[in-house]
Length: 445
Ligand code: SF4
Ligand code: SF4
Image (cartoon, rainbow, N blue to C red; front, top):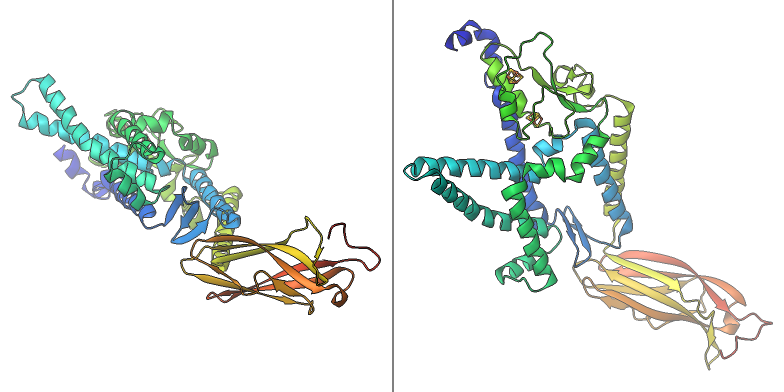
């Protein structure tokens, strides 16, 4: 082996630790994703708070009723998923997916415990060592499963509330039962399923394979010159237990590149490069040897550019919608169950319905005024309404005017709103219905 190394010093030098390059990148990315997985819900970066009907997006608290923002967010995320799957295949699975990160961590932990038990308790029999290794592994896995479940559920429930439930070992309320169930499923997943989940259950894995086409990034084995030494190191390195030499289109392949590293390591010792590489689509063009930058990042046809363009459009729409978002939402609509009523003083009343929602964190006040119908006045909310943070107020109020001071039939007016302290103004184009000159007021009015 030493001879082979020295006789090929220069070419081998170019692949000095190539065997670990993708592995290192992958482990670094996985660590970043693991930290992000924990921080996303805790800092409200992305979190669906189902009990409170809120969606948190980069610190902005959105109400589920804010349809446009939720819609744009969903479309942006959907096209992001489609774009990644179309361009880079299952690279998400190999580099970013929490299931893969925790499965690989469970594999490493189990192997490390087995090694430790075999080393330290070599005097024990094989069955005793095995039982001890399983017991130790389970002892570590249980708190790890509780922690992972806690973070996962935090995406949907307030972490502080969840923490209190956990401390009180709540398994009586529906929330507590749900938490305990998720923990149990997580425990069983990391104890028994692990990567089998990726190939047998995960719907996203199937979706990615459906979105892939002849230009998607794959992991290819090329050996036109018969250089493979059949060492099977690529197979042993594969976390999914497959042989990439059989096909680049295997459902189990997560494009993690561990086999590229393995082949680089073994053939590097012979002064050769890896027979396995990232390559684009069926043609198998080496991804790292593409010359044009846009082809190197996967922009290989109009379809991909179109999907990215849509992503940009939705992202821009989302930014604009968030920047225009007002913390206090005011809606006014006419109540036309009765067109109008007359009071004893001869005033015509039109009824309106007010909905005001304070989505902010401070008290707010909404005041009202009228324009375009000087004879009319507001009754019921003339002093404005106050809203506490997160309060929703629904109320009816009247606009009244003397019949002789307004035109018969339909009159037009605007109801103006002013929100303090946000200093945002609103305007509602409405109609005021008065009796027709020749028509008597409706019966009973
Ligand atoms: S075949 Fe290679 S790229 Fe695919 S999962 Fe196995 S090691 Fe990863
Ligand atoms: S690691 Fe490379 S040389 Fe060894 S079996 Fe796999 S493809 Fe062939």
